[in-house]
Amino acid sequence: VAPLLMNARDDSPDLVSTAVPMGVQQNASFIVDLDALPNRKDLFSDDNGSWKMTGARLKFFTVKKEGSKVVRIEKVGTEEDADIAIRRRSYICKSCTSFKRTIVAIEYGREIEKWFPVVLLSYHFEGAPQRFHPQIHGNRKESSSVPYVRTKQSTKAKLVGNVCNAKTGPKRALFNTVRDVGGVVEADGTSALPRNTRQAYYEKQKSTGGSNSGTKKSKDVLASVLELQKGSCKGFIRDVVCNDLPTIVLFSDKQIN
Image (cartoon, one colour):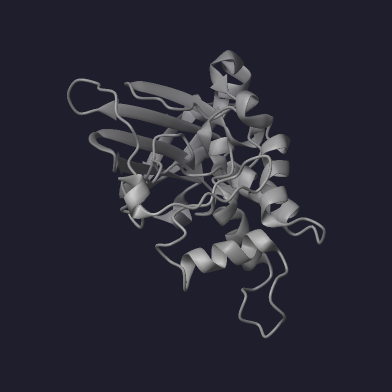
């Protein structure tokens, strides 16, 4: 695998993907160029919900070249004797346990920023392929909750940038981020879109060090509603969604029934 990945840009550029495949639910393998992604961590967002890592085997190799081309690799026992380390990360899909994902990367360090820029991304089923829908997040058990999709790291970075704008509240930051990724129609997948205003508010809290720093409370009305949803009015405020304008709909359990 290593010679294929290390030579792919020169030998087979047409086989190298410059984007992460979205919503793959079949047996398939891809060679992905990490440097072509807006953020390398976007590799882990694929619109298939949540994944659980089941293994991360690491092996060490020396590299043999002819000119600039890698012709073979030889396994060695220790990191000190090696030119590269190859890690095979295996995952199981929490929404469909027969669906597996494997990422094979050449590492010069454990952090993804230190990986060789070309990786192998594989999906396979144990048994016959099947279609499935991503489950809701494990922390949200309500039947009305939407399926969990991991937001791309590049989208989170845009959201943080927008929400840190002193003139921008969480709702406007969400709108601006959707626009920045191409809009709902042009986005390359659900993971490219920010999740909701709650995520925007959460990112704002993280960027400012939280809301318990002794500073004055935010004057953002939407942020105040989100606080009520999580706090004293939990259960009364059922959900907060993003429309063109803030809209509040009041109803009782009797009206729902």
